[in-house]
Length: 423
Image (tube, rainbow, N blue to C red):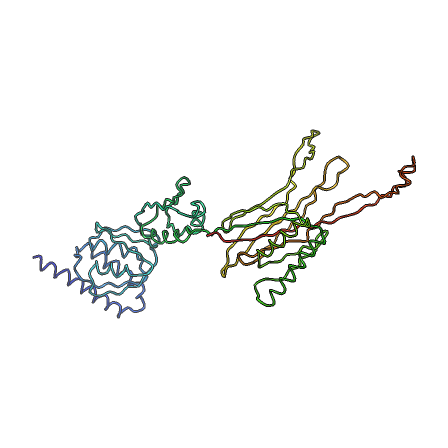
């Protein structure tokens, strides 16, 4: 009985299929109306007639919404179905001798449809692909050289590497805490290892001297001649470079290859009283970090606000700020900022004016070479009383006969900067 019933059902399917083709041949003008009706009838019949999932049928459709096809095929294949998204777009089908499950699998191959078989056997159909959910892993990454906050800032610029995970910073232990998917752990560890590298340290030695303008000119000229000669024969030094004039004199900058020769020259001049060393500070700074050397004094000035006067202090310093960056071939690039403040004249309100000169530049030189900055001049007024001794003893007239003359002596500030690499 069961076998005859199955044969009856299959025979009905074949009859419907043959009748469909015969109907298509007889009424060709109405084929676009017949196809949807025929598919709805066929799929409905598959459900009502109890067609089993392994039974093979022929299916034809024209402009049929895909979600309706999924519903009827899932019912015929006895599959639990969940659909999400817009699945109302029409499709054209012509299948022959396929089971309901095979028809579902073939329908899932459409690029507009994404199917996900669940472990329970249910089918999830969506219009958009679902991102796979990965298990999150917690990893502690200790840092040996770099600051944890700086590394975290670099990682936050590329949040896609975290893949929706989390990044925490432990300032106390300098550790990074990662909570990311398993497949992102190794790429992140390699990136952190590249960022956690030791930074080179540089020893910056500065020497600030003051000399009379003629001594400074002779010193620069002597160094310039030696630099020019050495540059023409050996090529290990550069000529003095003239920068633009600002204020009293043009600022000059040059590079000295022989640090020992420069020290001997300055020591000889200082022993003869021609130059005076104001300061010789030294600082060790990491590559890319700012190192600052300052010396000076604080000058009081009165500040009035809302009728109330208060005394504050303003710094008058001679400062040098440098940020080094190590280059290939034993060279270094220095971002330099030089500030020269000096106390000016006494104003009418009793306050002192401050004269300020600033220089900001970037220069490249070899490690162990000395950068010379010069040309910053200032004047000191000297008053010399010339008088006639014979007339000085006369009352009243002696004072009139005094010959008052003003002499102006110019001094030059020279700054020597020598970078060395610390091993």
